[in-house]
Length: 358
Image (tube, rainbow, N blue to C red; front, side, top):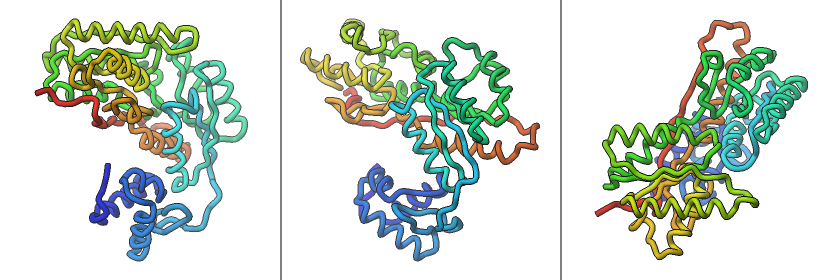
């Protein structure tokens, strides 16, 4: 999103909306989001402070009703995620941004996708005194009923993060997640509007997101009456099988060309970027010969041809997850409160890789 320097009102509204959602705002972060200089945003914040709309603090601003004097955190909240690369860092930043207004302190641990490690980390955080847990559980090697049994034994509220949990047992817990199925629908609908009748699908297998993307893709294709197109499950890239992934991606390109598919949805953006490179090496043009939308937007903008991508609402996810667990902590005597299962819609970020069909 780029807002012209000549539109201060739009910038002011953006700053105030960010504070309303997260309790605080960074001048540098807003400048990057709006495509203006940090000095411009600092001037905007000065004007808003003079008008009594916010309070300036070092590096940014907080709500006018908040104290400008730093306060000690009242509540430690444990956060257990699979890792601190890829999808989760921005979610954690969203939690951090919201933590100031909520007077929470985050204590982070990682599980590396091992259920036993995940449980040990969570239990260690509880022993250290956290009052609530935000958990992105590993569902491999444990059933949802087993996970529910373990969570019930925890003496603090638990909020699940970025997992669609199907069992009735887990439905009794709070959860905050991206609506990945609808994210895939957004991508397919966009390509269909551009005139693509056959849209292929390539998914990195063994990710928690992949089944949801496939579900949304199938729903969109069926509802729009689109023609059948190639589907390929992709192996994880590693040193031992590095060449295998390129073989699979090249085969997917072949299948798209042979079937008449003129576009594809690819998870993740790393695999989509590699498809661009392989296609260009063959003399194909992106998007003229094959339009692409990546699912995930970690490095999509930096591909050889900048990739249109489904962008998860990660900062919002972090803020909502922290807000939810803090409400649970403050309502410990209200055992009858209905669980909150929140699904937040991703957005489609359009770049150069999905041009219109003439």
